[in-house]
Length: 526
Image (cartoon, rainbow, N blue to C red; front, top):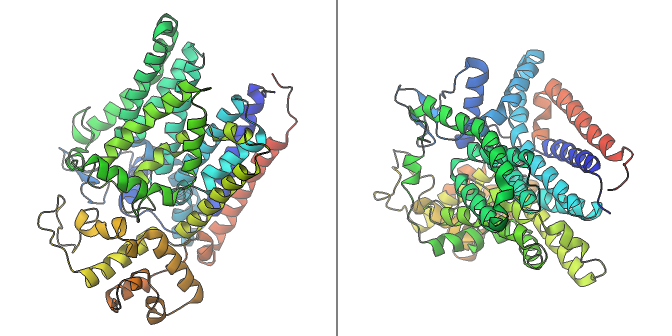
């Protein structure tokens, strides 16, 4: 029996609240660095200065506009999502001024946790509306949150989790219209979600455009019924287009200039190389970092006969963006855990997993395989979240240069600028992308083991991943090894006791609200 819409909304809200509370309890200890710092500084500027300038000169992620001021190249929504966290940080630091660093860390992690919680709640509601059981719908949420790389991305203030949440909402809005919701209200929702996606990351416009074209193609014979949808789409999208244009104009003096011109000038990778790197490369392949996406692929394949429109729309939205990223020279999206550019589409690909799980009832071998993939995925995310991923990237780069030599960066597409390395050029990234000796998963397993044992460098280096191939003592990595530490904000609780106590109470209240919503009496099914 299909639950009532009110019951679905209540249960999905409960799921979202519990997920965000758990994510923030398990979040990392790192403040915003690099790209994340640029996004976060825009939020600070909005709250404190009522402007959108930044102070970090970090080209091309931030560069000067026509007025000589520094601006972020990123879209506005990732920064807007940090505004509540900045406001909350200010409130916490007024209560406990000495705990400002703890306040900055925990509140800057609200936005990514919200993004994944949003994707989880939307996916749960989608599954329930399509008749999936509560058990399978909850298991689908658990797979998405705990067994994919989004768990790691939700522990650090980048925009990948937010992209995933907004993109999931857009794909679901498309499918609802294909399923028969030909109303102006459905069109408004579609327009709003489309606008949120583009204002979260401009390049996702490619998936929005192709998805809308696919919807029109599917409903071409019923196109006369789409008039209310088209009107609603315009109503919903217009404010979002205005925000997009206004933000571009405020930064670069042109409503169509996103600030990505320098970054987009670095296309040119062979698409087959990019796809191979994104999915199966030893150091960055999605299948190793998020093995649970295999379940999403199987569910899509099995749903082809019964839910062909949904499968087509998911593919139409996701595939063009994946191909675009495969053509980008920096397809791995470093610095990050796994191929972060693919994070946007993971929840969409897994939307049909819960109904498929229901069909596995009584098939022990198949269900055992699902549980196995789930457990493996959790283990991978535990390794990724145990240590901040930048540590291994820097450590492995130093080891690689000492072992294989310092590359010639004179022809790199991004200038070295005296830093001694290029943060995302092939010369410095090929090691942990393609070489098993510098695989992130193997490297994190090695780091976790030796941090837990408090081993010194000679002990740790003796069985480092590169030792399978060389007997050299790669001492250049020693400095980076000395900086390793486990990544949990609770480890620093003693340095900000007041903020820690307040934060734990807030998380308990959010989680309790979710449990209360879940346990409320359910209405009759429809």
